[in-house]
Each structure stands twice: as structure tokens, then as C-alpha cells.
Image (cartoon, one colour):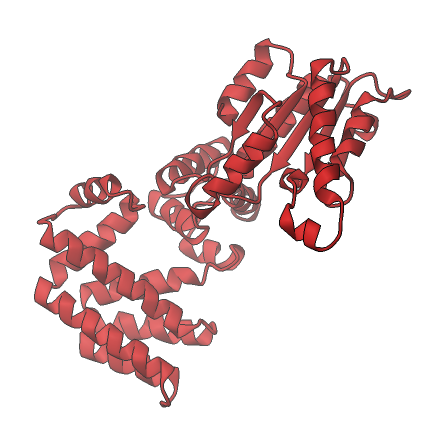
Length: 355
């Protein structure tokens, strides 16, 4: 089930005796934790009723024993078990080391299955695995975790937010906080935080305290408060190069140097910008809506402000000029890796040639 489905179920039903949480997303995980605490511990007795274990420190069998035990201080308990993936048998590696971990872990799984056939009233177990992604290379690892915990019927998947979902969440959080922030600034915030929902929520809270409700949040505020927001200067450089504005490009490059930015990273952003713009040009795309729709179909993350940047680049550079720019990016990347003068000189020559 999804986090939203779990929260909705908890409003009307008693919690399950055990849950398996998988996936790396932390913002909705915290919402689910809060909902479980409210449901399981209605009196808010966190000191006695909320118990934390980590399978890096204790065995699964010990966690099951704790769940079976009665507490004199809390009739209801929520037991949160971190690093749930560590309960999986280690197989050959453990056998080679002469250890008995694999046997102990299989015994822990049997103990958990036996416990869930007759769980303790008022006790809820949450096995939390946030180490692995739900897709890609980690998908098989997630499947192994789910197979190991097959006796736990209630499973919740925490997938990362897409840029579009993160942008929608940022707008909602800003509205709830009565934060005066424009669409461009929200796009910027989502971009520099890599669509991380938990970080977006934290930074919006910081911005609301910093800027208050009397004035609009500016890009300068974001650069001041948000960690790694110097990346916004890279996007300014991308936009200035896309417009062919030499003075603005050199100013952005100067700011990157003063902030100590790693210039090969800036060049990598530029390469991505021109590749996407060239693909849009070859596909005959001209406006941001077409660009956003086209790349979304290809499962390439694309939000409105980025689509507008690409559309602007397509309008300024012809396809031949973009190919030439990509060739020059390759040459510049090679120069940055070779025996050369200062990185700044290499990048300034790149800007002068491109604008």
C-alpha cells in the first residue's frame, strides 16, 4: 500500500500487528510514524510506549521477545525496528567466517512468524528498511527483504518524489505556512534540493521563519539559507549561455569561482542542458509545454522552469550551434583534466567562444 492509504486506514481501523516499510523516502515515512503514534499511543506516552530497536545492535529474535513481554508502564507499545534488511541471512559470507549468523537469522524469521500467528494485544511492530531504492539495481534487494518478511502482510512502499510531485508538495507546504514565494523561487528550491520532500519541508519552515509573512522570498534568501544552493548560480550560467549573454555568463562564472564551486560540475550541467535542447530541437519542440510533455513520456524528469530554460536555449541556438557547443564542452572537459592554466581561464575561454 501507499503511505496515504496507510494514513487513511488508520483513521477508521485498528492498526495491524506488524508493518514492513520499504523505500528511501523519509517525509511520508515521518507522517506515517506520527499517525501510528497517534493511533497506538492515544495518551502520547512516548517515553514508555515508543520503543526503538536497530537490527545492527540486536537480533530479530530479541525484538520478538520484547514484543511478547508485558510492560508495567505502557499497556500499548509501538516498536520501531530499524535496519530491517540486516535480518536477512548472510549466506556464504557467514559460513566462510565460521559464524552461525545465517542459522540465527532464519530462527528469528521463524520466531516472528510464530509471534504473528498470535500477536500481543496493543503491540505494533514496524520493520523499517530505507536503505534500498524501489527500482533499479536495488529492486532485487527489496524483493529479498519482502520475501524474508513474507509473514508481515501490511507493507508500505515509500518511493521518492518525482520533480513534479515535489513541486506540488512545495506549493502546498508554502501555502500552509503562509509563505510568500513565487513560482520561479519554488522551482528553484525544488531543483537545488533535488526534489527531496523531507528537505523541502525543512527549508520551507526555515524560510518562513527567516522571511516572515511580510515580504516575498527571493532567490538570494534561498542562496543564503539552503545548503548547496550555490548550484543555483550554475543554472544562472546555463540560462545566460542559453541567451548568448556574454556579460551575464562571465558574471555567473565569477560568482562560481568566488564561492569555490567545482567547475567541472558546472560544465556537466551545461552539457546536460545542451543535450536536452538539441534533442528538443531535433524533435521539433518549440514551447515549454511541448518539451515538458515530450521528456515526461521518455521518463526524463522535467519540470516547468527547466522546460522554459530548454525552450529559451532552442530559440537562441540553432541545432548546428548546439552541436558545436557540445563539441566545445568536450574539448573544455578535456582541458580541465589536462595540464593547463587555471580552471577559470579554461572556462572563460569556453564562455567567450560560445557567446
